[in-house]
Length: 367
Image 1 (cartoon, rainbow, N blue to C red):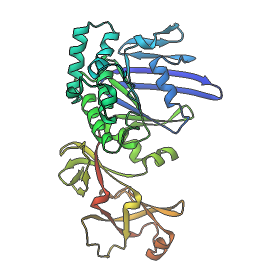
Image 2: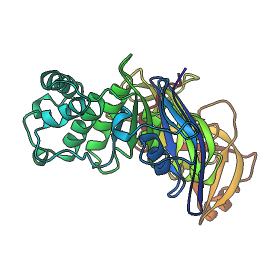
Image 3: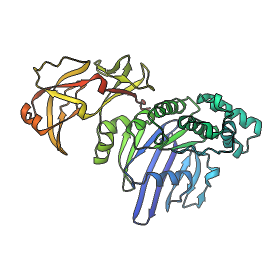
Image 4: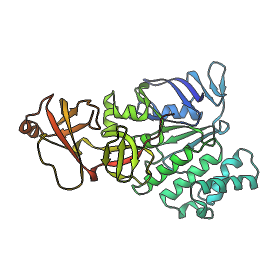
């Protein structure tokens, strides 16, 4: 059953949006796309900030927008939460009162609103911040509070607009892990729509993904499938990585066929979690199949060249689908290296990826 269903048609100048979205209850849909593809327009329509020329928006059976019936529930009455890059906390209020503002604006009494705020501050590990003002918070702390405020309003739909983009490299993984946890809470998590440019956000948080281009959906499906096998130039660019699915284990990832890929576990993944090993094509070294490849800890596998394609100043090697973890991988080589190795489709090669170049990140299971 879909918690969110939206048919949106909107023209803005020379731009035309034509999109249909479905988000099952308790799941997360990621929207990817280049600048100007329509991502912000979709969020604006869902939030009630923009009115489509044709179409409707329904959340948990409640009609929020229906152009034909002239229904347009105003933003403040839609029970739609928003988490953006900027936490947008009220500077004159304490953390506790910032979070309590959401239920208070819905008519909840002061005491009950504060109790709900304390509950959500506990859920985001920020209870100790309750008495502080926003100016006393770090970027990561402020975003934790913003998460609590968005959820304290008990929205039927949560909109996530690049929520990690403004955070530094130390804070982002913690907030990503926090969002994974609260969006997975059985029975409590709202349906969510995530706009992001970061494939790791999509992999960690989203069950499904749609890719927009010029106001149309050009790719959609399970997040890992879309990013592992991109079908448009944009998706290939945004992925820009090799992905191998499996389960996180101590020291790396166990593939679905039982092979071990050694790598470094991200802070927000634990042994036993569904995960992906992520590494760039540039991290894959290519050798003849008989070459000795000892040295620092590394992953080694013998496979077959499927194609060789120009890729800027380099040549991108694609491996054949031969059933092992190296199937469908890419490696970037110089033209001189291709000539020296006498590479051509059908050749057997040995691929080597250093353990330090492999990161293991959480990947949500498809429900």
